[in-house]
Length: 469
Ligand code: ADP
Ligand code: F6P
Picture 1 (cartoon, protein in one colour):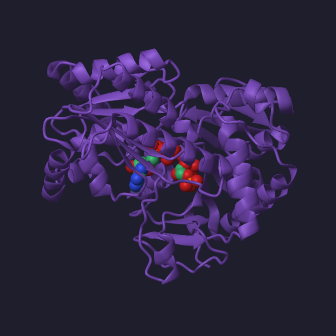
Picture 2 (cartoon, rainbow, N blue to C red):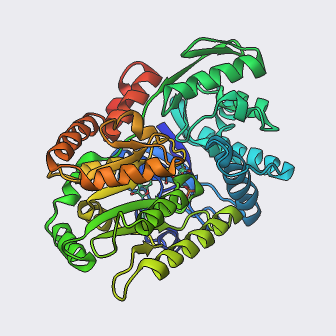
């Protein structure tokens, strides 16, 4: 086994399942922020990326992709259930997102979560060279830093949490709270999307482990763990280039024609997840139609909701509710050949997404809680001509950076309706000023800047950051 000086560990590899099965390996931009973000920076980087290759029992042997070596970790059907669908996505995910859905605490999931984390730690220990850096990602693998340190004390260990990290009032509900906090603290540097998350962890470390903590350090087990905010981003150049490609421009023309040349287009693009606030948005839109503030003759909503975590019951229930509501709205307000909402429950490739972003007059991103939300940044990157409005939830990490968006509290239905109308009716000059400020921000804070900032903070020398392609 060849060894690497940089190892990245995430739950998922960005591989197409079917492509992996027939051996013809291709990058898959699986819907989801994490694999998209890492995919952009790792293709050109000499590193090993460890993760799960999707819906299969066996760990397939995967060819290198560009300069990154892929190493898959096998998960049995039982492990997928207990670790991925269970503890990660039915316990931690809802709890970390303000418990907008009731977290499920099932004792038997814990053992599977721990043993799968141990397997990821062992895989990392095996491929990491002496004094290498290992960068562990997200809530699925929260125990890996400490497990890895036990196996390989020589390593430099980083951990990045892509999702929100909750305040003690919520975190303290977790039956395994001590182990989870201790698990993360095996890292040398813990990165979050927002500063507040680091303060939450410091409070928890004091309370649960009796650790000494400042605003950006935690002393535990005779070591100093650093914490910091590193807001994740997108490959801005890639999205810009896509959005101006001639075939994408043709798609935009076609979409405009298909949706109705003179119509104002509202667009939402989400994984079908209860954190994304899709139901609140649909209610607001139904009321705007009911009150006559928007009319199907001149406005249309395009809702892309790509299926996600389909074996988790709360996601199945959500899908049923959303599809029922879209059906009701279209039944009540649509006309023949003119639905109120176009609902698309399918994955799109990057160029189709770029075309959709360019087609929209108003992009509606209204999660109830979101670590970052890369869709908001992708929309901004795609608007080369400076037009278009972004309606953005205050509860998305992106709101801290894109303050020129039309910020909104998605729980406040009247506020949401008014904000949608303000965005629909805004003057082009106002929109252009807002868009240009947001575009400046993301141009300076793209995905490469994120990875460089994190890795430089991890190793202090800039050596790791220089490896990035
Ligand atoms: P999350 O990580 O919770 O899914 P983000 O907004 O940060 O939320 O990231 C979502 C990513 O998934 C974005 O890069 C977006 O382009 C992608 N995506 C969303 N919907 C689709 C879809 N229908 N097809 C393909 N990719 C999608
Ligand atoms: O950003 C949170 C996250 O869980 C990521 O790890 C992942 O990119 C995304 O949501 C999609 O989720 P999943 O990997 O469960 O399809």
